[in-house]
Image (cartoon, rainbow, N blue to C red; front, side, top):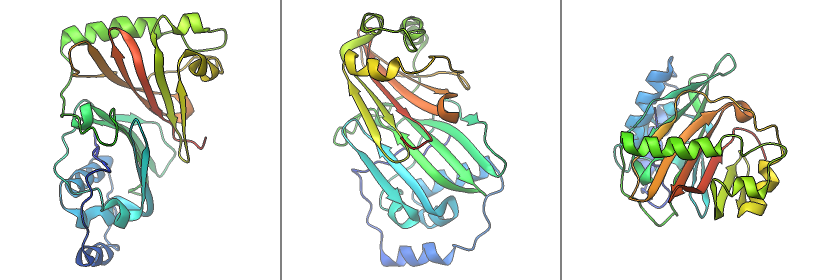
Amino acid sequence: MSSSIRAIATRTIATSSAAVLVLASIAGAANPTTVDELIELELRAWAGETELLSEVYAPEGVHTATFYDRTNEYVGPEQIGLVAGGGSVEPIGPRIDIPADEGEWRWAGFGSLGGGTACLFRAVDGQLVRHDCLLPETSSDARAPVGLADAEASAAIDEVYERLNGSWGRGTSVERLAEVYAPDAVHTARYLNTTRTYTGLEEILRVAGMGSGVFTLIGERVDFEAPEGELAWAEVSSIAGGSVCLYRAVDGMITRHDCVLPIRG
């Protein structure tokens, strides 16, 4: 995977003027020629080698970190340098490659920080132009790192997932959503330019009933460790050309359903 997942806004790293000069000096370096090479550089940059950021990100590349309470946005290697470099990032789960146009690479990656994070990446000509992350916490929480779920937790997620299937699409209802979502559940859709939030079953119905509800999963579901009584997982789907969603359930009912979509809202 990749993920520079700790795009985490609350941990600001001071960038000296000297570091900015270093970034500028390597702007002419050759771009990575494979996804694996780009991911390696990205992980090194986020682990402390911030001089690599101008190789990893396009000059107008955008990184966003969407928490439960806000989205923080950073444009260009210099701004991204304010949050990168705070420590090594531990990818967990598989990297999931998403079909892309010629000259582009797109993928989703998952990491241990923040209680299990998910990021959607898009690179053009070997540099990141978008790096959008979901973090299952408020901007002040700082959840402990997690690993992947055990077999028992994955089996419990399977049961919730079965109830979730078919709950979205034309003809759905509050009663159908109530079979899988908690009464005060929150669904967010993070677009390239805005975040839309739907709280409670009536509001979620406004978006859940809009389309056919038919989509294709890309790659495998990623199940995270979670506190007792909770379940957490992520998935990548064909929606909007390749989207990633994070889910959290408490006592078998979904309380959070947060997505990143690579389109404008």
